[in-house]
Image 1: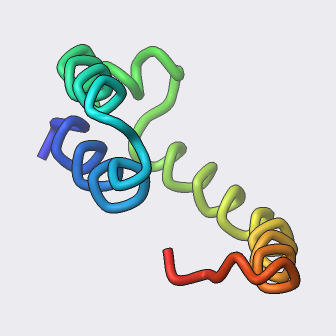
Image 2 (image 1 turned 180 degrees about the vertical axis):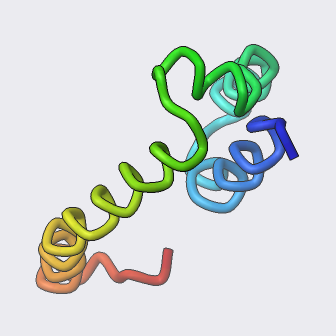
Length: 83
């Protein structure tokens, strides 16, 4: 769809909400209502779907080394990576 609220809400609930208190969870929930639609976001970024997809592929490829470093850091400090 065109809404960013549902995927952002799901990502927040799965990744961060368990670590936040009630007040933070409520503030995030309120903030989700002001997210732009996908169309509005692309317009503000001066992108279209194709160019945004290309940029995201570059980002994903480039971030692999950072993700591996963070994973190793968590494991070396016994923080786990089950998130």
